[in-house]
Image (cartoon, rainbow, N blue to C red; front, top):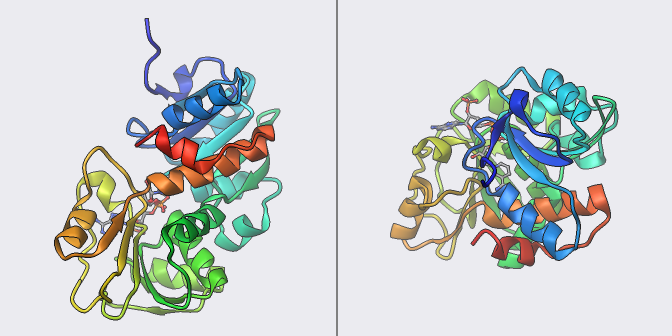
Length: 274
Ligand code: NDP
């Protein structure tokens, strides 16, 4: 009998590697990591485990007892994970959120943000380079990672979030210099990054697409079986589009390299989830 696609953390079987978050059923991480681990001739198992907000500390203790030592963290736990980590890399400290953890004795002994450098990896692959104006939508953990990465790379940044106070906090805490928009206006932008979780719920931020630069890239960090409403709208208007799969592959390859010291090309990981 084949194993379930995902487990609640309380019912997790023994294992070594996993992605934790909520919702988690849609995650392509297990498929992608299984392909990479098989290719590298490794026996570690990589699972998807549902951990709701507020339960991460208890879940980590239980998972460490079951043998887990490397975790990826997704919505909505990246900031909670940051607060639990004993040591955090430079990207993670600046972003204030982490997405890759190393566990020992039920504690997060080290944490990295591989979303921020992974995002820059994908922009390089897509041929999107500064200078340029980037509009970032959202103010959660991934919006923070994207804003810090774009700032470091030298883009001009505009930020829109439906909760203005959360957007203001993002800019103050990450020290990213950006114009905060009252409405998500795309005018003059060469890159629009949907870092909200709207697509996970079949919704879209209310982007005002008029006057985006021709050739503008609409980048949705989310991915799913069908195009998100955000990407459908961008494509209908003739803009280039990319979903969250390349970022998933880029941050995943960096995580595997860190946990196990194995070099796997993000392209190989991407081809497992296309
Ligand atoms: P968080 O829960 O930390 O933040 C979500 C953000 O989205 C908040 O700013 C929230 O606003 C906003 N939001 C949610 N729904 C809407 C809506 N309908 N309209 C406008 N804003 C909305 O999530 P993360 O930052 O961790 O993740 C965001 C997305 O990025 C998810 O879809 C996730 O799957 C994806 N992601 C993909 C990765 C990949 O590897 N491909 C890596 C990282 C993230 P508010 O504060 O008001 O609730």
